[in-house]
Structure formats: structure tokens, C-alpha cells
Image (cartoon, rainbow, N blue to C red; front, side, top):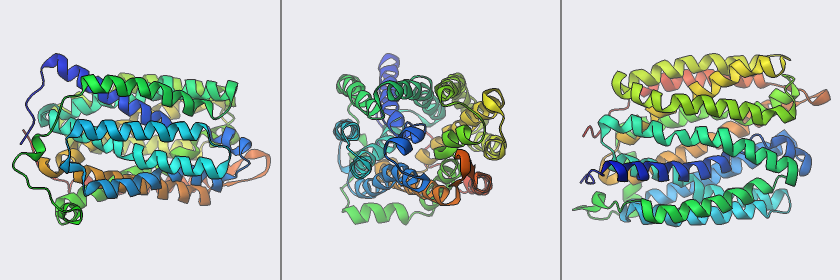
Length: 403
């Protein structure tokens, strides 16, 4: 039922293409957070309105992941990915053409509907094509998409927003994503071994089959808790750094550039290390270490750029790094024949966790006089509690395939 091994050159092209798809939708999602000051000023929204704009993508992704879980394993993987990627690019274009809060909110929901499932499909294709023994390394390679997004995508998007307005980044993402789509038509292999000898299940049966598996329930709970612990903090890092830590708006692209360079250096190394050390052990060490920068950044006072950078660099490396062994575990917890359904439900759980986290943070954090924010320290402790819960839950996830 596993796909034939790819030749080395074909495997590299396959992983590069998946990474490029990841860059497109990661930049589209990530750029919303540092665009906070531009959107709050340009659209006249407060922290709650901004939190809803961030959550819109997540809630759209949650709905599509649940819907896709019932159907995704019926279709060949490559074609499914390309169709959804094309629809995502149209939705991103609509974000750039939005005329106000309501239209941007609607466009962000649509971007989430199509973009949210892309991440789970990328992980599904990766797990179908790459053996378990090398899977964390492959996840680490594709995870460099996060690094590229922060090194190039987010800083360039912010410079575009500064020069041309907040709509420009979305238009640029749609244009570059179209080139990636064309490359994907050639570079991605046909992957349909998961359908060999497997009768299609009705949509509700496909979803029920995943939820009936206790191991999958633990994997979903682990995944949602881990994502919640990060995204209760992430959306407000930029506005807090400017309002409370004394970072200047023009210095934000530099923070993302340096953070992205750091993760670009560490992501693949973390993947190889996790394969050698054991994915569970690697996750636990990284997740425990990540609690320190979470607490530091959510409690720091006015320190300026130089005082902010050490914590932000550690945050980039450790919070993103813990996802590499975590996703290798989650993707490997499912039966390959039903991995698409499991990963689609995982996307739903992750998206709900993102949306719930950013919405909760938007209500806990308030903007006071002189643009200073209160309540971020409480958000930091919430993140730590969720992070510790994720460390405990990781041990309940068993690996299904170890080919």
C-alpha cells in the first residue's frame, strides 16, 4: 500500500515543491500577525477585531478540514493538492482586493477554507512517499518553508505594505504562488497507492473511523494542545514588541529576517537529530526548552531591539523546531490507507486551536494609554500550561507505520 520509493533526484524535486507550496500558504497566514499595526490603523479595528481577522483563516480551515476528511482518501494525492492550491491562490487574490473589514474577513475565511487543508495534504504526501526512518529529516527539510517565509516572505511583505499598502503582500503571494502551481504540475509524482485494494468509505464513516481509533484521538488532542500553546502568543508578538518592548515598527522586518535565518540553519538539523535520537524524546526536549522564550517575551519590559532579539530568536527556533518531531509523530500515527482523513481532521483540530487561541488572547489582551498592552503576561502562562500538557500527551501517541 506504500508508494514506490522515489529516485534521489525526483525526491529532491518532490520535497522542494512541497516546501514551495508550504511557503505560499505559510506567508499568507503568517503575514497577518506583523501586518497588525497596518490593519488596525488602515481598517480602524481594535485588538478584538484584529484577533477575529487572524481567527477567520483558522475557522475557515477548521471547516474545510472536517469536510475534506470524508473525501480526501478517495482521490489521487497530486491532483487533490493542485486543485486546492489553485483555489487558495484565488482566495488570496481576493484578500488583496478587499475594500474593508467585512470583505477582508470573508476573504480570509475563504483563504483558510482552501489554504488550511494544504498543510495537512503536504504532510500526507510526505508521509506516503518518505520512509518512517527518514521522515523527520524530510519534515525538517519541508519545514524550511517556515524559515524561508520568515527570512524572505514576511520581511518583503512588510516592505511592500510600507510602500504600497497592506493589500500588496496578498497580491504578491498570489502571483508567486501561480508559478509554484505550474512547477507542481511537473514535479509532483502521482500518489495513489493508498487506494489499492481499499473500498471507498462514506464520508461520515471515514471521519468516524479516525475518531473511533483511540490512538488517533490522542494524536488529535496532542496536536491541538501544541498548536494552542503557540498561537495564544504568536499573533500579538509584533504589537506587543512595538507597544511595550520599545521595538520600532521599521525594525520588525529585521526581527523576522534574523529569526528566519536561525530556523533555516536549525530546521534540517533538528529533523536529522530527531531521527537519530527518537522523535518523542526530541519533541519533549524541544518543547520544554521552548517554554523559556515564551515566558520571556510575554513578560519583558521596554528593552528595545537588542533586548528583544535573544528571546525572539530562541522563540523562532524552539517553538517552530518542536513541530518537526511532533508532525513526524502525528503523520505516522495513522493507517496509510486513511492517512488523508486523519491529517484532514488534524488540520481541523489545529485550525480550531489557532482560532480559539487568537480569539482568547484578543479578549485577555487590552490596549491601554500610549499604545501599551496589558494581559500579555497572563497569555504567556496560558501558553506554558498548554505546552506542558502537550509534552504529557505526546507519550500517548503510538506510531502506526515504521517502514
